[in-house]
Image (cartoon, rainbow, N blue to C red; front, side, top):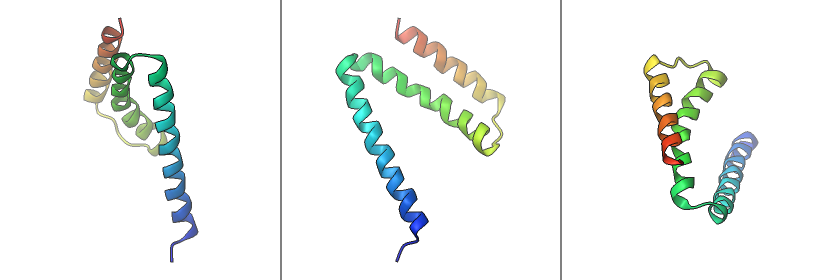
Length: 79
């Protein structure tokens, strides 16, 4: 019914989601939510950067400005 590759990809996706959920709970046991939640914003900088490196996508200069602002915001929030 389903291709083995599709099942592998979907199964792997669920496994990664489960692992990150468990890791998030582990993090929340060790640091306050107000500190941990700030670091979720870093994904907005990492995902386009990863797309550029892995898939050769073009990243506009406005991305770099936004990534820098996110970095500054994270730095300020955790002080």
